[in-house]
Image 1 (tube, one colour):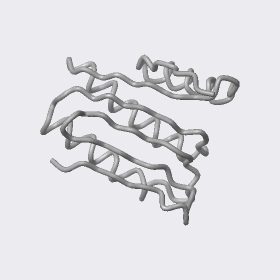
Image 2: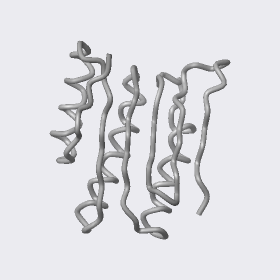
Image 3: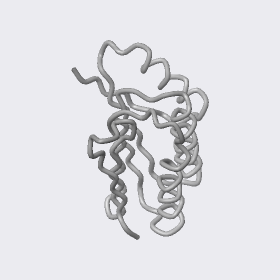
Length: 128
């Protein structure tokens, strides 16, 4: 299985950086996400996770470092978190950490909502 890397080249700042490592199971989503048609961006990410779950079956360590995401991106992030919870319920190791600015109460509320909806423990990591 191949790694998945999507690095924002700053010509389109609406898409986040993606670093999904198949050997370590470490997945990082960082930057901002406010694209107009998020399906086309997130579909390869979901496909990668599903393939990892079927083929590799190792631990998944998901670090989310999004400083902003719009409502349409929120749905796809939620879908990925649901997939991770399902994988965890089948007996696999899953750890999710969400990095957020200390004073970003809106983001904190979003993360709390994701936790309630998915039942997935999300560790909050404060950054400056």
